Length: 592
Picture 1 (tube, rainbow, N blue to C red):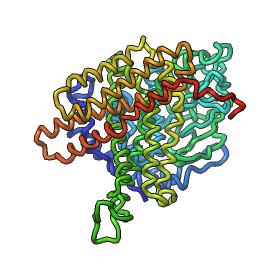
Picture 2: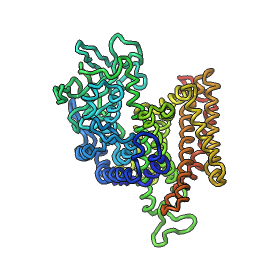
Picture 3: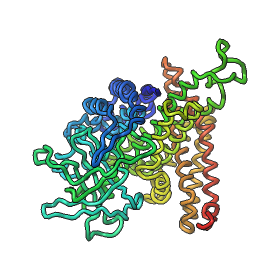
Picture 4: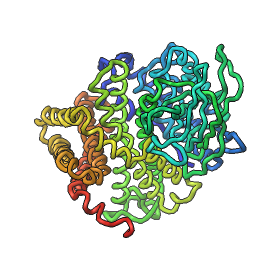
C-alpha cells in the first residue's frame, strides 16, 4: 500500500525563506512566524499521513455507492471527513465572523497540500465547499451570507459548482437550464447538469449547489447566464432545515479516477433557487469561484505527483535490479538498487525538480490572491489572472506526466492495481480536464490574458525577471547555473509573444495553433524563475551557517537540474510556435 509523509521542511522553506511571509505587508502575514506555521503543518501532516492516506486505496477500490436519487461516499470516509471538519481544517481562512480562523488563503493552501496528496478524492468535498463559500462571500447579500456561510465555512453543509450540461461544456452560452422568476423573489430552476463533483452524498446535512441557468427573456448566449444558490434541503428563517428541494441525483458517473468522490448527474425539477449577484451576470460570480478552484486544481496536479514521487523514491531505493555500470554498489546483495541507474535518477530528478518548483510557484500565486483580496492590490490581481492558466494548465499537464514517470519506476508492479501507483495516474488525469480543460486554459492565455490591459501584466512579469537577473549578475557560478538559462528562456518567451502579436491578427489560427506550446513555454520560464529565486534563498541559508547544510545543498543541486535539463524545452516550444498554423491545419477534414 502506498504511503505518504507531508514534506513539512520543504513547505516551511517556501513560506519563510522563499516567500518570507512574516516580513510581507499583506494583512495577517506578520502573524505567520515559523513556529506558528510549523504547528499547523505538523498537525495537518499527521491527519494526512495517519488518517487520510490509509483510506486512499480502499476508497479507490470501493468507490461511491449509488441508488435511485442519491449516492453515498465510500463507507470509510465519514470518520476522516468528520475529523477534518471538527479539527477546523475546512475553516482555516474562513472569516472569523462566520466561525473560521481568519488566516490568509496562503495558509489554507499550505495546509491543504498534504490532504490533497494523501486523499485527493475525499479532499474534493471540502475543496468545492470552500469555492462556494468564497463566491457567496463576495457576491451574496448580507442575508445570504448570514444564511449560508457559517455552515459552508465549517463544512456542516457542503457546496458544489454546477456548470456543465450534456450538450455543452466550455461553451456555456448553449446551456438550457432555466430559472423562472417567482413573485416572492425566488426562482424555479429546471434542467440537468452533469459531471457534478460531490453532487450527492451523506456526509453533510445539506448540499448547497451553485447553479448556472438562464432567466427566460434574458440576453442570448453567455451574456444571459445567471448564478443561483439551490440547496438540496430548503432552509427555514431560523436556519433549520426544511423540506427536500426539487433537486436529485439522477446517476453516478462511472469514471477513470477519483472514485472516492461522488461525481453526479443532477436533475433540477422546479427547484427553489436564489439569485446570487446580478441577473445575467452569472459568469462574473462563477469566475470568483473558478479562479480559486483553478489554483486548487493546479495544486492537485503536483500534489498527486508529490505522493507518487515519494513512493517511487522508496521503491527505487529498495528494489534490487541489475548492477551499476560503474561498479557494484551493493556487494552484499544479489543486485544493486534501482536508484543507482542513471535513467532512474533522471526520472526521479524530473519529478523532484518539478514538484518543488510547482509548490513554490503555487504558493506564490496564493500570496497574490491574498494581496488582491485583502489589499485591493490591482497589480497582484492582474498577475494572478495572467498566471492562473499556467498554474492550472501547465502544472496539471506536468503533474500527470510526473505521476506516469513515478509509475514507470515500478515497472510491471506499477501497472497492478494493488500497488496503488495507477491510482495516482488516474486521479491526476482529471485535473487536466475539469475547471476548464487545459486546451481552453491555453486559449485563454494566448487569446485573452496576454493582451489584457494592453499587455501590461505580461510586461510586468518580464520586467521582474529582468530585474532579478540584473540584481544577481555578480556571482559567476550563479549566473552560469541559473541566470543565463533563465535569461535565454525568457527571451524565448518574449519572442513567442512577439510572434503572436505580429501574426495573430492576420492569421488567428497561427496563434491558436501554438497556444498549448506557449502555455508550456511560459510555464517552464515561471518555474525556472522560481528555481532561481529558491536557489538564492538556499544560498542565504548556507551563508547563515545553519546546521541544515544538506537540505540547502540538495535544494540548489535540484534547481541546477531543472535549469539544465528542463528549462531548455522552451526552445522546442518556440520552434513549434513559429512553425505557424500550416502544419496543424494542412489536412482537410475528410483526410483525417
